[in-house]
Length: 172
Image (cartoon, rainbow, N blue to C red; front, side):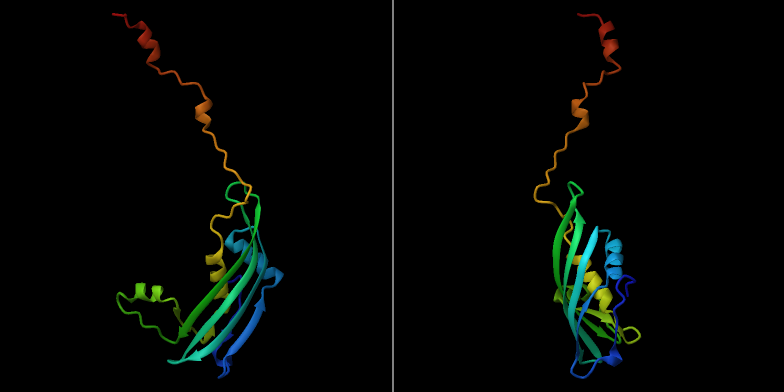
C-alpha cells in the first residue's frame, strides 16, 4: 500500500456480480503523489476500475487511469504539461505459487499476480504504480534546444611544463 494514495477495497465487500468504481484523487493526494514521484505537479488523477471474483478464491482488478501532470523539461527545466493514460490488470489470490523459472513467463503473460494480504485489495498502490510507470521518462518542450559548448575548447592550450626545457635544448 502506498501512503500517497490509500485506496483499498476489502475482499469481503465485493458483491457476487463484482464491484465497479470511479475515483478521483483529492488535492492533498495529488500533492503527495507529485512529491513522491519527484515531478512538478499532478493536476488531476482519476481511475475507473472493476473488481470481480475469479476461480481459486481470487479477485481480478482491472482498470484505467487518466492524469494530467507537469514535469520538468530535461533540457531547460521549464514545466512540460502532459496527459497520462494507462491500463492495469492484477489478480489477487490468498496464496501464489511461483515455480522455478516461471518468474519470467509470468511477467511476459501480461496479468500481474499478487498475494491477497489480509483480504485487502490495494487499488491505490496499483493506480500509483501505473501512473509512475506511464510517465514520460524524458519530458521535453518542443522548442527546447541543447546548446552545449566545451568550456575547455575556449581556453588557450595549456603550456606543458616541459616547454621551457625544450627551449634550453640545443638545436642540431
